[in-house]
Image (tube, rainbow, N blue to C red; front, side):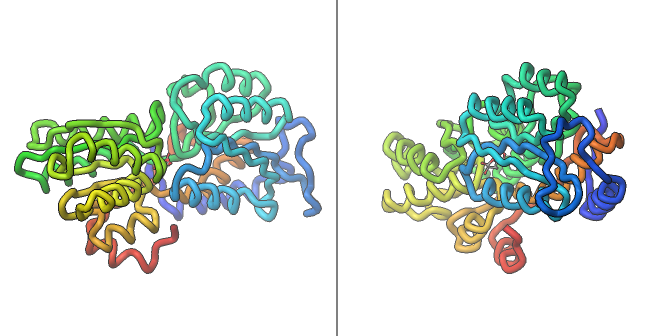
Length: 330
Ligand code: GYE
């Protein structure tokens, strides 16, 4: 399997190549492309988004809508499945029935994709995955652009193992059950803290939402008390922000009485880190639109593309968050 770490420059170059090489761009389509009044044929793309569960997702949706604009040569059919895996598969089926030129999916969960991906392949419609991955065979999709979720979890775990050297009771706020980031962020973190003095006393899904994180954290606080929990590992910022509300409501100080590590580095999370309410954040870059759009054009033009494009992430402590906040794009 080929694996590429791609830089902004390389992506821009691919994008420009694809733009100049793409005249009609509607090969494989069945007349669904409309010209949208711009004079040329547009590439009709069905995008099956997960939903609108988090700040990360809002930034990702905006990035995708901007990149797949009419000005860039696309006619985008956008669907957000409200975190319902069956509804997302139904949306992909409807894109196939509409005869779109290409389908882009941010898969809610990893499993269950084989049949519908085979149907897309049978219809000659290429599928490009963005953000999350699937467990189905790689032959069933053209390419994937996303993040190394396991490495994100590992970076968070390494920081925790270095920082908490005495006995530490940790609770985990997991992302959506069965999603690639929830699975991989758990694996990466658990491997990194193996043999450390951190004990995972509980772990439950908060579905990547602020409300979910708050509700699960309220339950943990009821069960273990403020004094029974030293550390929260949240699979995303939104759940950490929900946990902050629960901790404050319980009369404790988040970031001090109970430390918090999360993943994403969206604006509200970074602000909480700068304010000392979160202690460490590993970034997960949601700005994948341009890369996904360039890949769609390259695939439709018959160019060979890498099977995986992984965008690199950074990590932030409080000082780094204060320094980075003014220039953050999301
Ligand atoms: O971390 C979370 C979102 O799939 C990487 O989904 C994405 C995750 C992100 O809901 O905030």
